[in-house]
Length: 316
Ligand code: TXA
Ligand code: MG
Image (cartoon, rainbow, N blue to C red; front, side):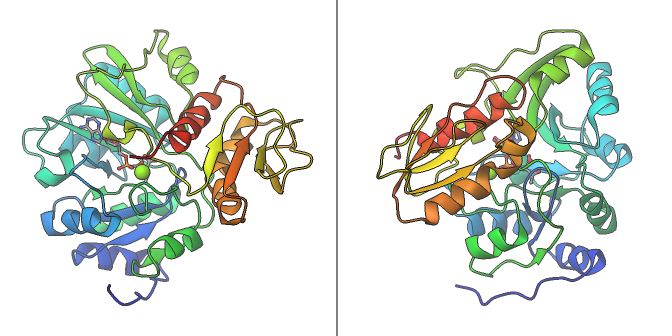
C-alpha cells in the first residue's frame, strides 16, 4: 500500500499532479472525482487499480469548455442543444468519438463513443483548464462503496493514498445524469442530478430510460453498485427497534436505534445532497440494518430511488 500523499493546496498544484501522470481527487458539483489525464493510459490505468474497479468500464471525461469538448466528441444539433441548455452542469453526454481525439483507449473501453461533461463546479473547470487536457474521473471511492461528497470522505475511502484538492461539500451529492444522443433521439442511461423531466421539458420530446438490454448500457448500472456495509430495507414507513432509520419529510423513524432525516421539509434537492453522507453515517452506527423512508419518484426522486435500490440489492 502506498504512503499517504500530501494534498495540493491550490488548483495549480493539483493541475501539476495530474499533468505529471499521477492521480488527484477533486470536487465537482455532483460527487468527488478521482482524476487522471485522459490522454495518458498509465494514469488512467491507475484509476482502475486504485478503485479496485473489476473491469474496464468506460470513464467520463471532464472538459472546461466547448472548445475542448469538440476536440474529443462529435456534436450533432441535438447534442449542441443539450450542451447549450445544461452545461456547465450535472449532465453527461455519450457522443461519437471525434476522429482525431487523443484519448487513451482505456477511457472509452475501446467503444466508438465517449462520455463527457463540463462540470458546474467552477474550481473543477479551472482545474481541467489548467491541466490543458481532458480529465477522466469516476467517483473517488473504492469500487462498490458509497460515492464521496466531501474531501474527508475521499481520504477515508483511500486511507490517504490519493491527494485531494478540497473543494468543499458537493452541492448536489448525486452523480450526473447520463444521456446517450443518437441522431435526434435522447435516451437516459443513468438517472442522476439532472431530473429527466427537466431534459424533456427543455427539448419538448420524451426521453426514455434505457432498458436492461439496451445496446449501450452504462456499466455503472450494475446492480449492487452503491453499497453500504449494512443491509437496507426500502420504503419503510416505520423502523424496527434494531434498525437505524434514514428518514424523509414526516417519516422520522421514531424508536429507531439511530435516525437521520434526509430532508425534514421533504425537499428532494436537500435529500440528494445528504444521501451518500447520511447512508455512510448510519452505516458507521452499530445497527447493521438501515430502514429507509419512502421517497417520491418525482424529479430527483428517480435518481435517489435508483441509488437506494442498488445499495439494497443482494451482494454478489
Ligand atoms: O457525476 C459524475 O458523473 C461523476 C463525477 C466525478 O463527474 N463521475 C462518475 O463517473 O460518476 P463513473 O465512472 O462512476 O461513471 C461513469 C459511467 C459508467 O456507468 C460508465 O459505464 C458510463 O458512465 N459510460 C462512460 N462512457 C460510456 C460510453 N461511451 N457509453 C456508455 N456509457 C458510458
Ligand atoms: Mg461511481
